[in-house]
Length: 103
Image (cartoon, rainbow, N blue to C red; front, top):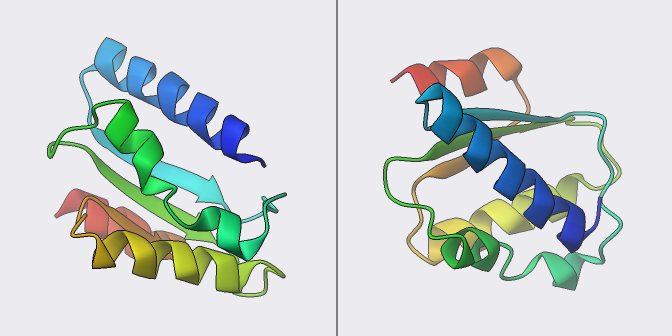
């Protein structure tokens, strides 16, 4: 998945959320491999800022603990949290991700 793919996924997801009246999303990336370099993940949260994602939106992103890109997922989460965004969390356990969304 590229940055452009991630942006389009966000646009499509937000549109579906608006249609169905939900602002909580489970993004299942357990089998996804980013096509970006680690440094390209820096600032990915700007995509959501550019789409005017508000504080009501929550996204739990599930990825495989065995992913060859697990460091990239971890870096993205740390970067996002360091910038003060609390609407998105990454999980390697799908049940934990769903539990966080339900809180």
